[in-house]
Length: 375
Image (cartoon, rainbow, N blue to C red):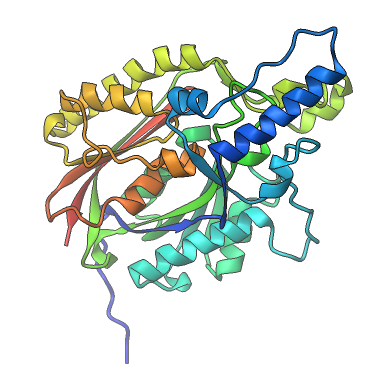
């Protein structure tokens, strides 16, 4: 029997999402106890130096809104002698840890869409840090899933997932693919300086996946992508200097700038108005009343930033229903944060409801994806 040929529309939609959450979690109380034990040891060993300050649960929650974070390697992070995840290298013929969690999220997305791997044309691995330079993580994920076609990695820090969604949507619009997986495995615990009081509480680990497809093949319940917009403005206020050229300057190896560093106050002051203006301009271009948006799935980095951005967009203080938070239990998961929020807080929306997936972070980078629920 000959298979019926589907006429593609060139109109991209989100068919499904997937989420992998590491089983281990670190509470603020556990993190503070570990950090303060390290401070005691450091201060005792360096009596001539300016003493390091303690951290506290109150400080962390006031600064960020974070209460806990999932991690791939809990015990070593909490060990004052280590304070870093320990993920042993695997043989080259074994699935990499980053690919492993990406595959888990991708399989859930495929299952939720009723899709088989052979139905997918491409895999984009969109994340803030790649486990290696090559072969691409996307190609390894593609191989593990059994997908024909192509894959590649892309890195725009905290906006990698939304940049990936627009890239996937553009492939669909151009007719170059009918089904694209955007996978964001974020093992951010690996680039965090757990000995830095100002940032030791920020990040957590997770993996998300978004299946972007042509509307003609989408499941009955899906999300129309009404429009996407990307923006970058160069800034050093969030930076990580780790890279393959470090070995060419060995005197700098292991210094704090080879991990995550940021000027938090500057980031807050500069990114909030930039993102709010970008959202309002794109809503105007699309003919969408921003005050009528049913839900905002914002980047999960800082509760205060989200509160201000949502207020500027909606015109009032957003409720938890209008701008849901996953930051409190997941921490900052870089590009995955807004996707986690969408994955966990979108099923209850009604037919025709309109919402916004939005990312912002290092670069500076920002991405908006306006969607409407179809059922």
